[in-house]
Length: 89
Image (cartoon, rainbow, N blue to C red; front, side, top):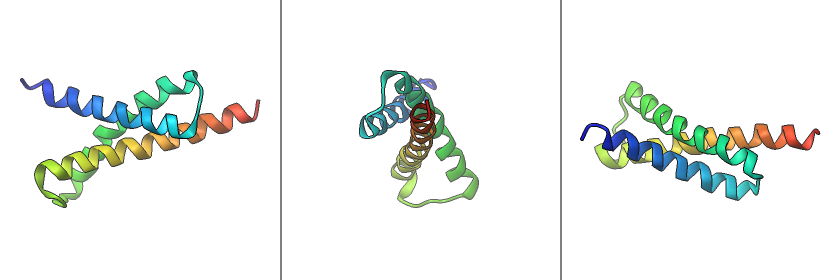
């Protein structure tokens, strides 16, 4: 039971990373990095929310917003880095 919530957060972050990758229209090689960045970014967003002791949106909604926002930021940065690296080749 304790593994369900972290898996849900990882999947939510990966889905956000996939949507960002589709928005940037990047190739499949960046797709896996975008998924990984989304999963890690979701946990980073929750960590930042907890360390700042923010309670915006209540417990559940605030946590989901922090996870999606963290995944969004991490995936956008990853896609920008890989997009510029591929354009310079």
